[in-house]
Length: 164
Length: 110
Image 1 (cartoon, rainbow over the protein chains, first blue to last red):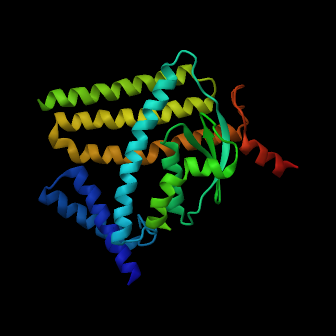
Image 2 (cartoon, each protein chain N blue to C red):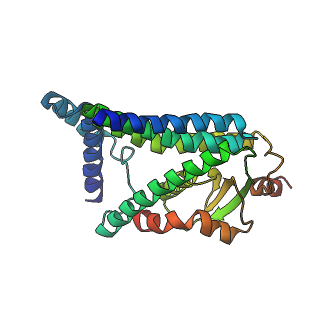
Image 3 (cartoon, each protein chain N blue to C red):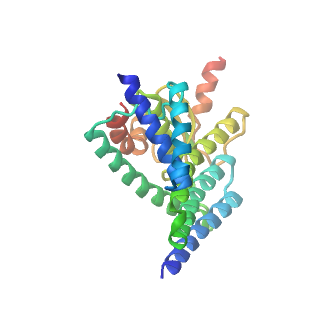
């Protein structure tokens, strides 16, 4: 039953991408659904797109919140980096710090690492289990807890509900 | 009117792309360059595509797809580059204050 539900999600997401690419033409829809169905039937495990996403109302709300926080941070980070670049002295204080995450699932960790890379002044250099090594353009604290609170916490609380 | 809005958004995107390339020129080491090269180009490209959405409304589906792919792949590729640079032993710039990753590698070597 679980596999069936996963297959339905895979099929719907494949069709979603297909429709985004080709538009709502009846011939395209038929061809796309045949291919999506074939892929879903023959590769049920490897084609599961979001196997660890928990489908519930609460996680949806959190995911939408995450998207908002993420967009805001993305804009903030761009303005931040742009200001540093055009500043005549280039005010940077870089270094690689270590932070820890509470997330367990693989997809959640990928999402977290990606969000860290796209937020102000941080770039994920290496991950090792629950440890992330992050290049920080302006190191303001050297110890793990403070750095974790400053870099990770704002995304982690949303992702934890969605992916666990 | 839509053309004008689209043009303004596309122009903003172009400014961010320009600042990103300026950052790649001005930053002192590879990691700081990655910072400028990742963030500014992500938002720059997103704004670029959003601007085109306003100008050519029949392309919205494809452009949304492109934006999604850029959001997912851009940080992954820059992470891979930074990781490879660190594995290859490229040093941080002189004004860097700390390097936990090198410390961890040192522990393994001992």
